[in-house]
Length: 272
Image (spheres, rainbow, N blue to C red):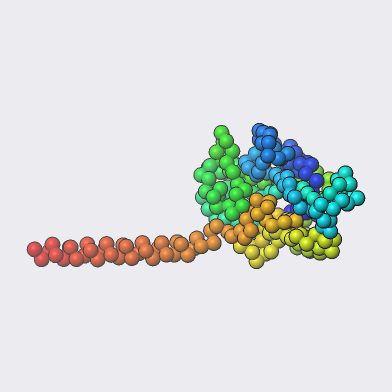
């Protein structure tokens, strides 16, 4: 099971952020006005498990041309700018590095294929934070433990959809079986291309990418970097087995060398 977030129909209402906080009893995160955007939560963190980004661009949408007045443009004026709204969340990677590095088993894979942190087992070591290729996991100030989206694991077990998907008024956030969501997403991209939105593309839906596909993937209207997403994410523990193998070989060689030295010195001492 997973999320498909269609950013082309996101209106930036932040209902998903509010629903996530209410259901999961997440503390408020300051609500500081940055002066750089209408977005006052700024990014994902221990106290923000769903984050709606507001991205302003001097770029028209679809068949509209910059500097040309269009009847359907805001106010009937030139269609020379657009807002990109995007609700970000933990990607629930198929190959999740956070699972690989957690020493206590606090992070686990659920029966729905999602990745969840058990806060009562987390010891606050923080290993999972640099392991995440998306920078999603965070430690809560004054607490020290790691927190992130659980895809409302308790709701899923009761047959309910996650709170954010339930609250989304435009169905920008869709929940369901990943195979079905991928088919639906591919059709939506084709539809947008036919409407002249040539930059529409899917992100994180490919099971053969660097993380084995995301359990939460997105339809984007521009390059991933515009949304603050890595263009080619790779599971950070990909080379871990190879590293340990070479470390073991080096350690064995070192021990072998030390044994040889002691053997030589031992024989020399006996001769004297």
